[in-house]
Image (tube, rainbow, N blue to C red; front, side):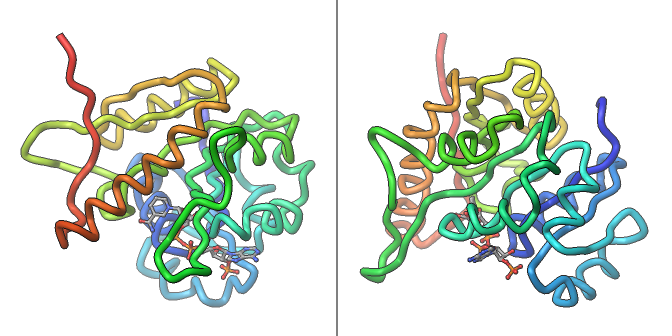
Length: 214
Ligand SMILES: NC(=O)c1ccc[n+]([C@@H]2O[C@H](COP(=O)([O-])OP(=O)(O)OC[C@H]3O[C@@H](n4cnc5c(N)ncnc54)[C@H](OP(=O)(O)O)[C@@H]3O)[C@@H](O)[C@H]2O)c1
């Protein structure tokens, strides 16, 4: 693939799962946090291709960037990372605009806007692709489900960027469904809630979406 270095903004389970996935494909990864010292153990366990840093260092490092912060922290993380560090780059937006003020998770934006579109507006010179937001972190890389490869639904305005992210998804063991421009995030972000509600109801978290057709 035509990139070597991946900058990951997010020290949570998603950032770590995708970091491990990119490392398994041979890429160098810098994983970012407001407190990079919390990633010391992770970096040790992830091997030589992994380093940690601030959001700014991770964004500057990556040929491509993964945004994997809490949805409500995404804008702050982007500002801390420095918008110029995203210019021209592919940004994989794995976030969901979840808020928990009433206890159970719910979307803080939807129908006429989405976090994916907001991220693209905050980063007009980046090529944002919404992906990986419709499945739990444990299945993001090599999901290996008995029903065969699940489908990663993605969207974004730049076809080359989507081709590259599709390649990544296929290497990670996924089929790919491209839903069009970044405004399709309005439908991908609620899909996260479908995934979560099924998990809460069934008590299991090993499920993923697949489109069937003939
Ligand atoms: N967990 C999943 O399985 C899953 C699956 C699909 C999509 N997602 C989405 O992926 C994203 C990451 O999820 P996660 O579970 O890995 O971790 P998370 O707990 O949602 O987010 C952790 C990251 O968010 C950063 N953050 C939190 N508040 C911030 C703020 N005000 N300003 C800047 N950064 C802030 C943290 O920074 P520090 O490192 O400085 O603490 C940390 O790096 C979320 O948007 C989530 O909805 C999650």
